[in-house]
Image (tube, rainbow, N blue to C red; front, side, top):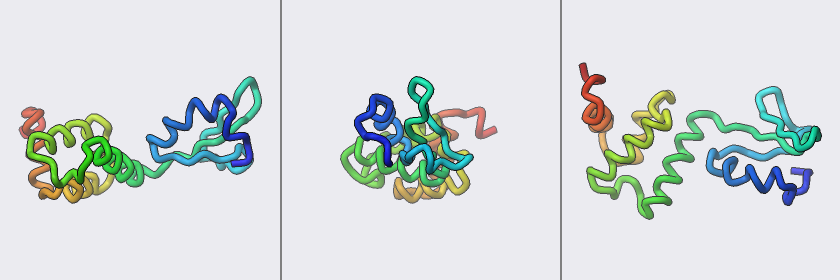
Length: 125
């Protein structure tokens, strides 16, 4: 990025951009798909949002860091908690989301669906 990395706007949004797995760009590098952020009327930076599938991988990696171990090594109750969190974040609206999560948890797709339905009996009807 050609803009100063110590600009207050960059400093403010960088943790969010990193958490989303997005990319910071100079405003002149922005395409129509990017989000340009301005400070006092001057374009300071652009944010390139990740594809949804990349976001899911990023979220899973962050959850592993938070738990301090591979998600597959968690006990059943913790895995159910991971599935609830991922559902709240929209992970299962991503194409192949269930398969991706099942692989990360070391369980079958059927098990992920069971975890989802266990918490919301109305979905299983």
